[in-house]
Amino acid sequence: MAAAAAAAVQSTRGSLREDLTCAICCDLFREPVMLACMHHFCKSCISRYWRGTQGPVTCPQCRKEFSSKQFQTNYLVAAMVEKVRATTSDAYTKNLEKQLKEALESHRLRKQDFINSIHRDKEKMNIIKSVAADLQARVKSEFQALHQILHDEEACTLEQLRREQEEELVKVQHHLEVTEQAAKELEDNIKALQEASTATQDIVLTELPALRPCAQVDIAPEFDINAFSNKYLAPLQYITWRRMFKSLKPGPSLLTFDVDTAHPSIQVSRDKTVAVESNVMTHHVNHNKRFLQCVNILAAQGFQSGRHYWEVEVGTSPKWDLGVALENVNRHARIKLSPESGYWTLRLRNGNEYSVGKQPWERLRVRSSPQRLGVFLDCDERRVSFYNADDMSLLYSFANGPRGKVFPFFSPCITDSRHKPQPIKLLHYPPAALSG
Ligand SMILES: [Zn+2]
Ligand SMILES: [Zn+2]
Image (tube, rainbow, N blue to C red; front, side, top):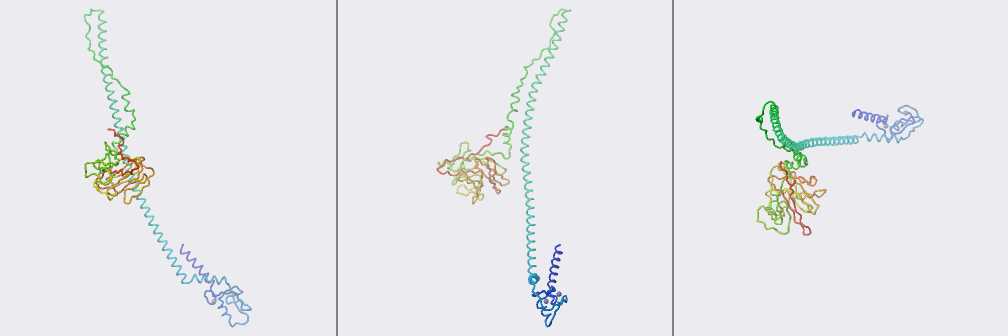
């Protein structure tokens, strides 16, 4: 198609060039002039052709005779000739070819760019699909585990009901059998007595007939519908849900503070679940686990494998740091919190400035101020994630988590004198897991 179109353009241009060619010099017109017969020639060609002729002259093309040497300049044709001359010049065509080449090249490059981009898009789609398939399998297995827990709970509860029903039935069945036996014995005795009674009409009865000893029948066992049903009419879903905590992987860890790590200005509650900054320094026994420069404290429970989750209540405290710290962090120096120094943390300053504990700090946009924070530690996948435990929305996740043993880390920070220090509480939720 393109070749045919180009040929057509070429031939149009060719015939136009022919139309604008002088029949005398066989070249494009120069200063074209028109005779009365409408034929055109170069002004110089026709002048030369007629030179020396006296009297009438003829048109070199159609031989028409004119009485005098008369012609007129055709500006329109002159302009067309100039245009054709310009567009058929070597420089012009070279330039045109160059432009063509450049346009072609740039189109080719852009096309290649698009092809590369399409390639990348397709690759990205494959990655998305494969990551999503992976996640799908994980979600499925998590739910399968939950279903399994529920199935087991259901089977266990139904089995218990079946056993209790059986026990009640056995009790009544036993009573029923004993009573039937007793009734039968009485029946036999009645028969014997009746026979003896009939016999007295004919003979003198000297003694009572021998009677079978009657079996003792206990009082009928009570069936207490209430006692039997109560357990199963209870808020079964809630009880099961409470019991499930024990089976969750990971369920909320029951953390306590390690008092031996507490900075001297941190006071810890007797049950070791509440830590608060105080302007009165506690004189502890010196311990090499203790933070001496920064107002920090660790939990007593360290982790180096598996997945763990815990919740911390920070309330409306305007300032805190929390996360995890490697066991071997320097506790006697003032350290900037960052993964490089062994801390994976989230921090709050001035009541609403949340940041990721990196150097430099990375500010986080947090929609509502969480009063409870959840920390998820996946030792195997080296991930540390922070959640707003009020609604379980993800706040931030470190993908390059710790290698080696870490401890839950907390800092109530130093409260300025205008405010009352607020405690950090380790949440034990539910208050107590129900035993199976
Ligand atoms: Zn000419
Ligand atoms: Zn003519």
